[in-house]
Length: 290
Image (cartoon, rainbow, N blue to C red; front, side, top):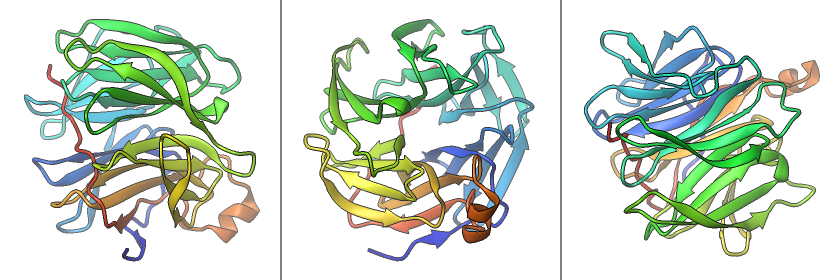
């Protein structure tokens, strides 16, 4: 496996939500606390930024063009070319929660969860939005709604509620988008970081970013066994996704949020975007069907 590369030089406060756009061959990602959307173009190394004006937790491509964003109170369509932002009706119309991680499933439905902005109470909810804009809650009493992914045959969906230190699994019905039979796939140990963002590969393994763990680990979802560890020069590795023309390049977001002055001195590049070429093929990014 190749060496880890640092791709940006201007750090994000809370880098998150990396999303590979296969058609454009670029990586979209967000700085939640920076209230901004980024687009990294590997062809020229340029990282473009849009000021969204409020916290943006996640980004996904749309099949008809443009992007779908998860904002503080709900979702919105964004056109990077015209910079137009079309907000959909609010899902959680309050100042207590905000939306965090989200991802589209193989049938183009958007899954996204909310969390307590103070990160104290389990008042978040995990939702699904279909192509017609209908939003349905599926999981309540969530602490910090985070990573989402699917196994290769698209029969299992994974979901992370970070404070539990667990990766959960659901039976997933691709045709209907229903999930059932929630169970713990595996739980991180006391010496591990907190499970944050995740992705999967075509061999069915999970790539998990560990907040306060300075690493991304490839794990067997059946056992939680670490198969590969990627050390990252940032305490808070927040999320990861595969990209590149061969879908074997792992992009990793990091954060500076919550770091002490001593940590910032030790890890000056925390908050930047990183990439490493792997020996496996990652699962594709799915687009929103609406």
